Length: 288
Ligand code: NAD
Image: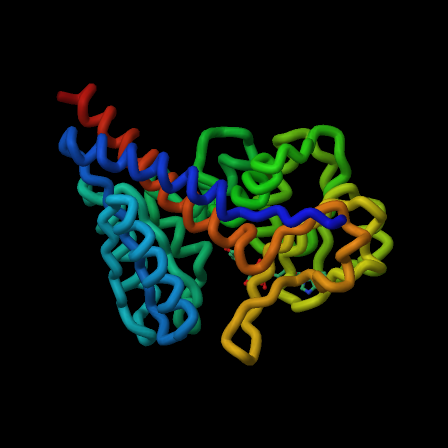
């Protein structure tokens, strides 16, 4: 009786929309272009970057990968981001993590022009999001809300526990949920009695990067659970932060891993990129 809140159908709809918009922009002289800056030898990061490039290509978005190597100096990363921010042919910029030791992702992402910050990585984007001003939200945080919306799960007035306070997922997810009139509590590694806190929530968003952290003991009967965790398993697969076997039967609904928040995240990144390109296109039009 626990429903599966798949993200695949919504991701397919988003990609179809993105493909139509990319074709329109290309036909009118603004082929959408995404740049991914990476500086790591991390294999799972490389896999993720390739998957973004492939998904972009399928939607008709050009994707350039700027691999600065695992020894890149922070200044070199910043310079590349500044250069791409000034390049009118580039509409979206992603700074891939992890970065070399000594490089601070949030600080460097500040070099990405807000209009091109399609993964909401810079402090200005997060600040604008918090202030209720237009900005791209981090795609994973937005995907949490998008999956709930896609399954018609109401948010206004409902108690939501967000487990995790990172700048890429937990904090922006809490802001987006607040903007939708949910009553939000944010838990983290120093929270005492996590189970009591999550058990008082109607909706639990698990974004801690701890496999199996959320069990039946953490939920009230009928809770909706969004599992953001993508933890690698020894057999090369992925597992979430929720112990799916444990919560099945008690939760009303659960997003699967893989196939829940993940596909929507990638689809949103590409959707943001065509939106950024459309804005650049109309700005160029009105300047002409
Ligand atoms: P992070 O390590 O930066 O942050 C983890 C957060 O969880 C921290 O705020 C920490 O305080 C909290 N936490 C850790 N242990 C906890 C515990 N026992 N109880 C309560 N809180 C605890 O991780 P992140 O970048 O926010 O990512 C979180 C998870 O989401 C990871 O599994 C990551 O792989 C996944 N993720 C998925 C996508 C996607 O597209 N699906 C994208 C980004 C991240």
